[in-house]
Amino acid sequence: MATDYDAPRRSQEDELAEDSLEELKARRNETQSGVVDVDVDAPDENFELPGADLSNEELTVKVLPKQADEFTCSSCFLVHHRSRLAEQSGTRLICRDCA
Image 1 (cartoon, rainbow, N blue to C red):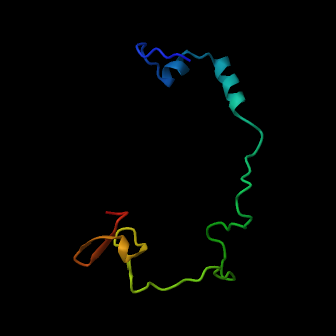
Image 2 (image 1 turned 120 degrees about the vertical axis):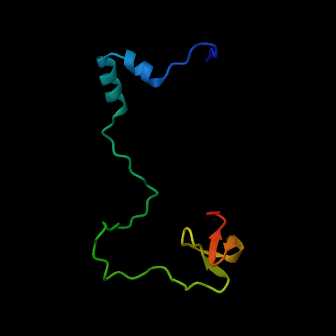
Image 3 (image 1 turned 90 degrees about the horizontal axis):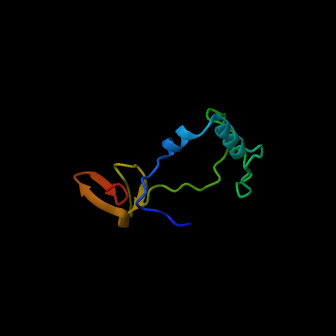
């Protein structure tokens, strides 16, 4: 489709202002669907709501303490390897992502 770059541009608000009520209703019905999107790649885990009782749950990941070659970023509070250290101002350690 050829585009005339010299023609004045119309914004979406201009187009909506010119549409009739019947066209807007028809367009709304076209975009809505009664089908629910299901993510087939989603894990089949039961996700708990906030505030749920998790006292009987066990960790499925082994948690390691901070190693000697790691630091905690003073900005994002994530533990990074020393190679991710961007700057050190006094006692503040900042990672490359936050710098």
